[in-house]
Amino acid sequence: MDKNGMWSRPDDDPNNLTAGQLPNSLRSFFWDVDIDKISTVESAHFIIGRLMEHGDENAVQFLFKSYRRDQLVNALKTSRTISRRSRVFWQILLDMDETSCTPRRYPTPYGNC
Image 1 (spheres, helix red, strand yellow):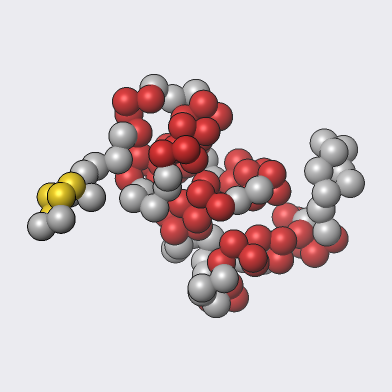
Image 2 (cartoon, one colour):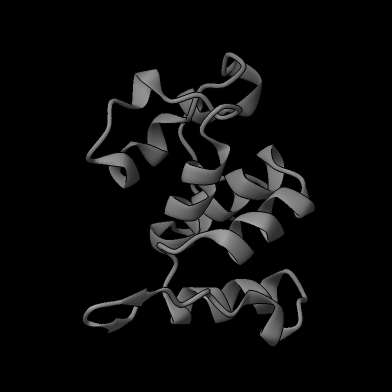
């Protein structure tokens, strides 16, 4: 356990990671992709959206350590994969106005999605 009371593994130390690499503790959140081929820089929007929706406390810490606030806000405003529940949580955490993160609705033959 670290000084903040968070559980961490030695291989998840940000100082031991190569640039652009995700820690092993986040591997379970990326079940559908090859985590070794994901770059934290090139795939930032995907990583942020996935961790905002499915992440745990370690994922939240990783997001705040790895990305600037404006990157988190931009992903929250533009991602269509973040649920309303997660969106409200992140709006509170990032101290944002609720209306700024309303997801866009697109007309389809089946109604607005």
